[in-house]
Image 1 (tube, rainbow, N blue to C red):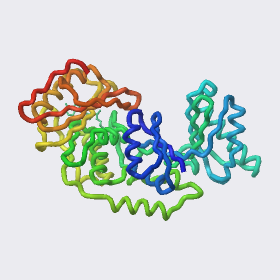
Image 2 (cartoon, helix red, strand yellow; image 1 turned 45 degrees about the vertical axis):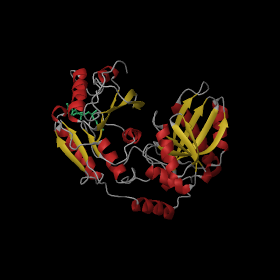
Image 3 (cartoon, rainbow, N blue to C red; image 1 turned 120 degrees about the horizontal axis):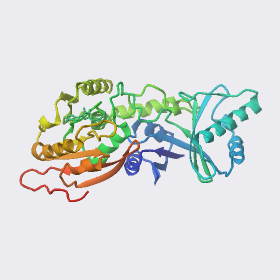
Image 4 (cartoon, rainbow, N blue to C red; image 1 turned 90 degrees about the vertical axis):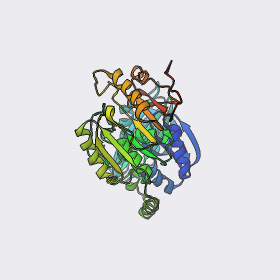
Length: 384
Ligand SMILES: C[S@@+](CC[C@H](N)C(=O)[O-])C[C@H]1O[C@@H](n2cnc3c(N)ncnc32)[C@H](O)[C@@H]1O
């Protein structure tokens, strides 16, 4: 079976590595997506275990169309009774990058019309639409004249992990947070810190990774595939059981700090629902006053960018961060994500690695700073 996973721009290679570890075959990296082959068990595992996938799709049908009549007719030619019954509900999501089809919403609507018309003509009744929790979620992707129709096996997108009870302003998307941690190459062999932790997304994703807990372990709503006609509950229970057996203890510590009481309250609630209270320590403190909690470790930070969270003097904040890395985090590896390129320069240290990532619509840099012990001089940045 061919499987297509969607992700965020910049995380394609990380996702491909994850898929390889799960045993995917013929892996191909595409734009914001990775395709591969596998069986039903792998499909279930991908939904439960991939940390950087947004959706897991199963392509079922592709054809060429240059106008809406051909498009409608082709969609109607597929026998949809193989996938749903008239009493089931459906939702169609569309994306188009084509001179022939301009509007994603229209593409989705036309496909829905073709499907319900097929049922009406055959059975005299039509299935209903349910955009939130349909029996069958269908995904249409059009590139020029190439139309690809897939079944969405995830249902709700996979960043909806099921542990986020409360939101703060400007939280990281869970997939981006997981992708940042995986990109850092953290081997779970040292302490992990987020010193501006907000609602705790990086801490929770790190905690789940550290203990080998699948990222979707806490999801309560059904995955898309659980409503399919060929759903194999026994296989799903086996997948969950095997994942549970791999959950381990973590030998190091995870610390979250923030200067904001409210943020810490939100983080605490989310950490509780991810069952990581024993593993993550939270403390209110400003970064200016923070000292490294141990001799060695990794710190990943998502400071304000002065975009969604406005800050009076953003350059000063980043300069203070750089000074603190040098003084208080010797021996640590520090990563910072930001869309504010000017402010990043004010950290005043040369990054040893730069990764481009999208945080929503914001083009960001994810920079690594290695804070060597002792006398090794940190060079000032000339250019970034
Ligand atoms: C962009 S938010 C982090 C969001 C977080 N990654 C999440 O997913 O919810 C930035 C956080 O930095 C905190 N912050 C800003 N300046 C700080 C400082 N000087 N010391 C400690 N925390 C600070 C803010 O209170 C805010 O919670």
